[in-house]
Length: 155
Image (tube, rainbow, N blue to C red):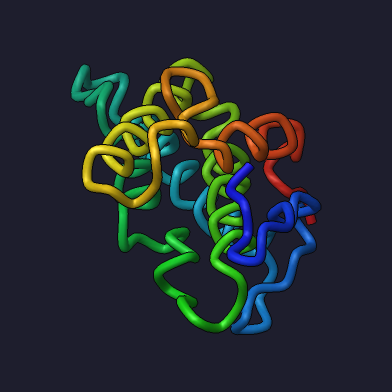
């Protein structure tokens, strides 16, 4: 878990109903992103009879959602408006909740690990924070199971 600046543990009770500084819930972001992924699946299914399927299109769409500076990069979008730890946990929860069922779990873990290794390499946090699967950071490790279990934050 990413320790808060005052040494207390980071908030780990993030879920679909967690409110973000703009008043929206994490679940609203999850549902919006999952609708985008479903639209990609629907397009690919429509193209399948013609043999014009792009097997990477779902990954490309997911990457546009999950990338640094993307719509679930809450710690940067809402910097200074809530604790960095809460926002990191909310982003990691959303990452796993969005991808669950669309992206294989191992691929999600590899993506989180790549982000963790990059963060450690550029000095965002020490390598001792890389406690999750494939070197993902503490926040990703903490939010992985709850995010995957959220079942896409059904309304």
